[in-house]
Image (cartoon, rainbow, N blue to C red; front, side, top):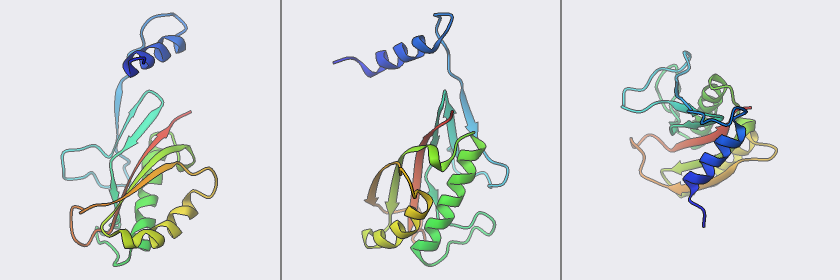
Length: 149
């Protein structure tokens, strides 16, 4: 089996016209339209042609209040992720992996009803798990990995 780090190294070398090593810089993505978090993590990180978002929760970015239902919270989450990915030069269409955290797995169908409207064609790979979220009023959190062309 080939070491994954070696594969990455080979991909980097193949993409470098000069045959040298490309050093990829880590870029922190913080859209101006979304408030910076108060916790020690970045909203998203772009490295090479990939974007990794932190988990976004269902609170409204303007008011900070979370709606009482998982459908509205899912909409808020995906709208925030859309803004973040666009700030990084990507989009929801370029998402390759999503991880959904639900405070109660019984919310799955309500979350999924909204989620599928944001990914009508070729949705990303996805995992959905039940998890205790940061606060009891938060019902859903989603993180995404996407590429940049």
